[in-house]
Image (cartoon, rainbow, N blue to C red):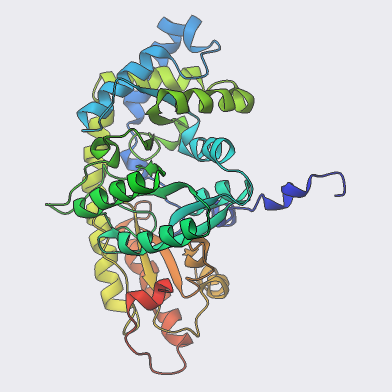
Length: 414
């Protein structure tokens, strides 16, 4: 329509959301969206809490609230984060958002001007890419490996940018239980990343939805926010995976000046996040419901992850590669042939009763066309095994010539 603003063309449909619509009500094994397993939802406890909140706090829980969030909830959330070893400085504030997706949108609007340079991981969370693209930045992708973002390649990119007389607005990272790659940044790389950010005076956006779900011992999950000594890390979190996505509650923790600007941006977006769900979450944290939900989900998801990894070994074509996810909800699978385009293959997969997310959506450099992200949190173990078997058969049928081992570097375009 001619009446619409030109930027409306930048509102791209999320492939995950479109797949959810496509598979709704159909007998499809969905390995696509990162939905929590409904069996982990504390339905009875939340129902009891919701009833009490409305009856006993109805005048507050059904009323407008401050944009930054209900003070009582923000204090309880701060205590929760500190119990999880997230450092909260005296100069920090917390902003409650409508899911962490709103936080990404607010950051895009507040930080990015046209042609500003931002750095993301390669691959990275596709909804973050969608949010940032609306502000017309120049996006540089830095590959990850088994230890997270390649900080040596990050340094190379920073030198290139600054040699041209430009600056980097921020580095966006998911350091623990990465989405979609499932890897976790080593503590050495975390420290190196912070050192580079200090040297080049760059803000770090740390997105941390999945650090609660780490399945291997000895994995360092220390937040960048905790290691930060200069107040340059902005920390994002959410209750979507650890309590319920339907509550639509997320947060931003950072320097009070930044939070103040984000708060003013949020006022124009939705005035405030739901009062009712904030009070429900407050009581869920106080009563230990959140911690119990995390522990139950961690046990459920570890079993499912192991089933998926075993199924991939049994059914995927020779030389298929995937980084072993030490945490999170996903496995990123790279098929061993450049003849395969997983976007085109998806139509056939759905016709065979299986859905996944094509990997190209997660690559800011246009790569990843022969990859796919598979979710293991939502389907049952038997459906995971069945779905992977179907995808393995479909992929083998598409390989016309014998495949050769391909290094991770070639997958990431390094």
